[in-house]
Length: 475
View (cartoon, rainbow, N blue to C red):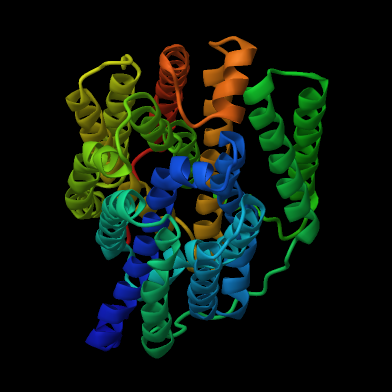
């Protein structure tokens, strides 16, 4: 009923567009992180402002993801997926010409709208194209695309930032986006009945306000230490999130579909994704800051140190996805999380002059774990979601994972700042991109503390991954 009724080229080009979407998103995520020190210097901005170049993108995707997934269920998943490519491409071109940090933040917001449309509907488009017993392999290919994109982002970012200008890191999205828009509109077709969905603007407002206030409070606290204003911001954010939860419990068509969360496998998979992102997403950022700020490596040399992990993850992901199709997600996903805990723990023993091979080893172990976790966990979510709620399930997964990503940056900076005097934290996070000997020692002490905290969170993710149980895949 699925691919037997699809023309072969439609399935091929459909998967190509999905993989290209993941590829472009991965290139953007790693290439921007690699370029942060250079952008910070060129635009005369501080580290906290540059962190918001990353956070604004993740924050908007987080707030928009479930709503955009529901709009896809209602008006057409393919239509919104293709629109996302178009908006993301325009946003990338605008970022490339940003004259200052403020406009760069604004144009990153445009990118985020497009990225939200892509990420919230991609899982549902795959689920429309393939039957449940073949989706794990498909998600394996998307994980392959993510790792390849991350590799390209690191290599291209290193080359571009070292030898040309950081503005090209956004321009490289444009030809990929133009091609994907053309192929998507030409070959992807709507294949599911439209579902009637209500759009909860008030719930989205509560969620966005709560996350924004908490992130502002944490990032300011990282630079200057906790003060009354930070406490008010975080407290107000917590109140907004409580209002969001209350709204969900009383709204007849909530952002988080509570019916979906009654499924044990779905709940365990989504929470595991949240905790994995919370623990791991800021790791590359901290490692790049270490390599460039402490060790004095160029962006290109820093990229070469961490690439092996992405290469290993890219080639392992399709195999892990296929394995999850056969035995379920619990074993490969949980084993992947365990390997990531080992990789992050290896980062936690870094010193100012640690050998670079130790970082490559940690990146390799972490990459293998990611290659096992993502395709297995993603396929478990879609395999256990009702067909009419594919968009909502995909959007909910992305929302929780994105919340983890967003908070990961702010929380890691705050935890790192707690191990050093306030004046040093302010100089590192608000004042400089160059780290002297004393600042390097303080910075390394801070990030290794953050890595140890991440290991604890990964262990919590393993618990939820194991307790999800073994799901039965439909044929």
